[in-house]
Image 1: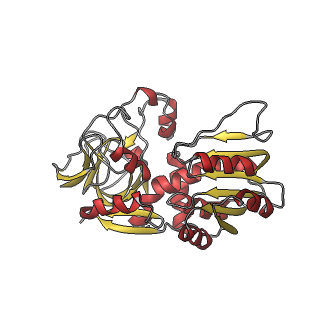
Image 2: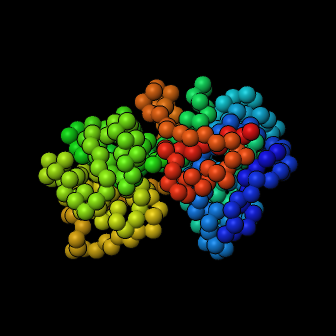
Image 3: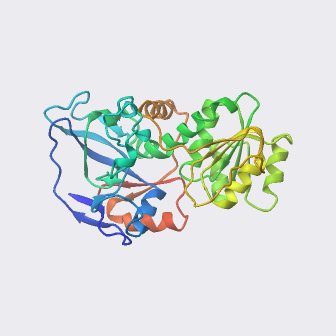
Length: 346
């Protein structure tokens, strides 16, 4: 079968032929229907040796949807032919967090040489994917694969980040979304579906702001020297109750903290390398709280899939055949993907 594999650090991933896996014990073999392309895949493909503890080679792809092709002798809870989406953050499988479906916060994460499918373990940018256990799978019914796959990270991470801000998102509140890409455009929709907040969107690209408007943002603005003042004005002068920063640069963090009202909350989701100095007393608003959300739980993934199946959220996608993965990576690198790039096996 074809698989897009990271073979050497600092080198682009290569599309190669590998043996189709055979499931044993509790394992489940998926026939991949779609795999989302994430900025973390870019970070991996460009990382120097030593940047990650992962052992090479492995197949990329942590946003995966498909159908069950075969079962190991001990596999339970799924049937051959069933359509599913992958809960990609695989932990140790034995700690209290993992057994509760929260592999994203595995208690033994620091001892593992992987973070999940496509992140140190073989992922879904291939024709087939071997999953260790059915506990990593969520049914999707008739939901399109190119919708389900990105929801397993872009949708789940946004949903989890918003859930962590729930206490600040009361009726009449203001939420700011910085960065309206693969995650941000879903965050706008999830806020519209689950909160009664006024949603303000910020990006450096006009086309991203047009996407924010289509997704339901009440106000959108390109990032400039007066953006903070414009956001405060849109919040009635008091500032934002919550900010979701999907960029994570120094510039975006400065904007985020400048527009938060006292008691406001910031969810730092993006990995743009920015720094935030936290000290008391300091320049941050009184009562400020910070979260660093990582993916989400299996239960939350099921809730995201339910939202999508109800029509409340929709992923803006650009599809590429797996054989054109190099082109998809380059378009993402240059910021030319609208929403989420999705690879489909040829």
